[in-house]
Image 1 (cartoon, rainbow, N blue to C red):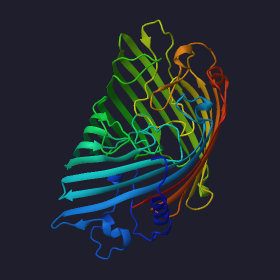
Image 2: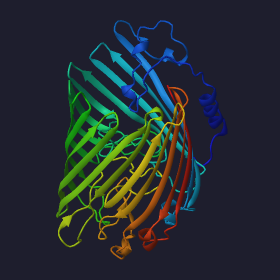
Image 3: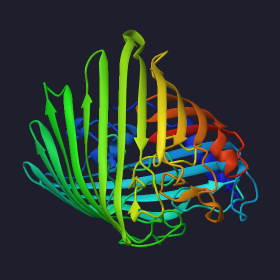
Image 4: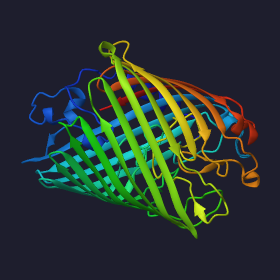
Length: 460
């Protein structure tokens, strides 16, 4: 799959650019099974792609179809600060990500539902080895679940995407080419002032080829609740999860991990000033090591230009790293299935980390969102390395553990833009620059990273 099929690529681009752009008002969600096209349910004069929604099967039974086409061209200069495995041919990379997804939503009366989604992700122009979970999954059954819907409780069983809170615990992994799904049971309760979910799932391991995905390697069991106060202006998330796995490594040591994570997230939705405070504590065992780890994040922001939705904010995060390799404890915070905290350019996850993050958001013109931010990043402990967002240790190398006491990762400058041309079509340009600090230089080449991305997405 190293060379693109030009006919496929041209067809996709023409489809995105030339497709009619007048559709009924609707809600296309991040989680496609939460799309809201109910306005079309009784519409007898549907036009264009709207004809694919709420096709009657007789009685109170309907089938709907939808999908997504995403093309993203990326430029990387100095992958991983210029330090890549011997199997890589280059640290300067141009690549094209292609994502196509189609789904079917079948509603049988008011209580039963089936949702099926196929996924195909491909990577072109890059000769380095493919990372299936990030780059390429040629064809997979991405979601396939049955759902029983009662008055206050829904029971969902099968392959399914999910996320909670602000994506810091469980996410759909929207940024990378291949999204993340789970296999198992989710029981969802909805109440007047909150919700309560019970979860028993295993992460789906995305593989490169056709219908070869795997699951039942990791186990995640727990509860996630949300309670609202003051007419939904203040919210409190609370959660308790058990994570079990044999696949993760800490300071390059393998073993069986049985970890509990308990935490909370307090957040507001006020007119001028808002804040978010999240804290989590982890206990359990990794081999014969007792787990004691934590993560704390705070974010405060203010609306300073209401007419342009101008917001300035400051967030700070501290996550524990291992303190002493000989104390029979493991202090490395496990990100579980969190979103990449620092985007696609930085190969760093928010564990063993101290970060300070001022940012600005604004809508300078209608439909255009702009986010400018800078991260000041440092290791928390010099007795632990740094890990990728997927909890794979990438610094230092196995033969140089604890060889440096340097902590500063550097300054990371990010500019993200998104132009929502229609409810179906959007464009995004992202630019970032990571000025390497003393730690990347002490543990490798330590070159500065430059990243550029152009993305077009069409959803229906």
